[in-house]
Structure formats: structure tokens, C-alpha cells
Image 1 (cartoon, one colour):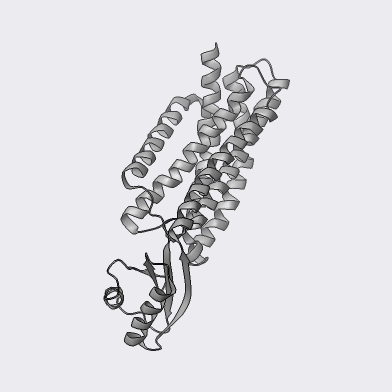
Image 2 (cartoon, one colour):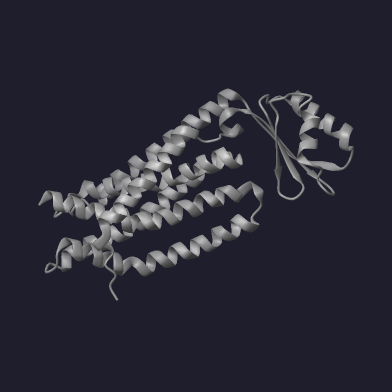
Length: 296
């Protein structure tokens, strides 16, 4: 059975534009909540051996040192403290205050510190890494499809793949802007790693469809370009669904049972990979058809 995906291509593109604009608005208005990887500062995580006290009680213990200390529950018995000062003195002051209150009822799980200049440098490098990855993808696709100049120029394959990638990345960023605003979820270097993974996974899915379009252009000549693209999508649909589902099942398992430290890394991948499968069919391919129709 052949599904006519391209029949409603205007609807898919319109929906994608709305989602992308909303994600941009969320990011522009609320931004992302950066953790110490980017802002600099200290992070201390402790685990209460028995039942964790009320989080407000714990907060009152450490705010006597510094009102800017952020206190957040994590998991069943863990508490995470974030403070702007990244020195060991602040670390020891917080631990001492907690010991005075709770003696040996907790244990220290980890302490991390990043200087403000290092954090700013990491943020800049993260941004450039994403931009460079996109440029490299465009160049690679343009080279790989260099022999396909009709009916759509080869460089446009790369351009449309990037537009699909931008949709995927912005969707993840928009969701985490909302999570940061309403749930206090912050992002750091693992989030950047997730975005780069989404870029690679999504473009791989798009290239599979584009490659089938290229093959069909060489062996099928009696159907319209729209029907040829739709046929190519249908021929690769089973592969796309199977690959996406198996990957998502593993990521969902990580999200629920993989621990707090990688929970939202997995969530970013879940959103991005699902969006990548969507954009390969409902953004990249309709854009090919749109470019062909404008050329006519």
C-alpha cells in the first residue's frame, strides 16, 4: 500500500513553521537555564541515608551562608546545591552547615566547580561546534549529490536537509526553554552533545530518503517528480520507522531508569530523534517538491 504523504505537503510545512516559530519565541522570551558548565560556579550533590528532610528545611540551612544558593531535590533522597562561587571554601562551608544540622545522616555524592571564564568559553565553543557541524553537513550532501542536477540542483538537497535540522534543533531548544522556565531544568555540555547527536541522526534519516530519490530519478521517468518523491518516501518508510522505534525504546528506558544525571540528556535525544524522523518526511521532501515547482 502506498501512502500519499505529499498530498498534504502544504499542511506539513505550515505545521512545521508554526512549531519552529513557537520554539523560537520560547527561546527568545525565556531562554535556556544554563548550569555551571556555562555560567561557572559550584555544584554539590548529597544523598540522605534515610528519609530526606523537607526541601525547604534544607534550603533554610544553607541560605544562611549565601541567599543565592539554589537547592533542588534529585531522585528519592538526593539534594543538589548550586552556588555562584566555585571555590573550595564555599564547598566546605555548605558541608559544615549541613553536618551541624544533620550530622552523619547524609553522604556527599559529588562536587564540581567551573570558573566563570571557562564557562563562557565552553558556551562559545558549544555554539560554534553546532554551526560547524551544520556547515559540514551541507558541504557533504552537496558533494554526495553533485551528479543530481535535475530537476533540483544538488546544493538544494543540502540546504533542505539543514532546514529540517534547524527545525529539529529548535524544537529541542524550545522544549527545554519551557522546562527551564517552569520546572527549573538546566542545560550543560550533555545538552550540547545531545544536539550534535540529533544533527547526525536526523541528517542520516534525511539522506536515506534523498538517496532513494536520486536512485529513482535514474530508473523511473514516467511519473511526476511529486509522485517520485512520494514513492521514495514509501520505499524507505519501513526502514525509518524501525530504526526510530528501536532507538526510542532504548532512550525511553534510559529516561525512566538510567538515573538523574542522564535523564534529561535522554529526553533531548527522544525529542530530537522523533523530530528527525518527522522532518525527513514532512519537511525535507516537501521542500524538494516546492523547489521543483518554482523551477517550472
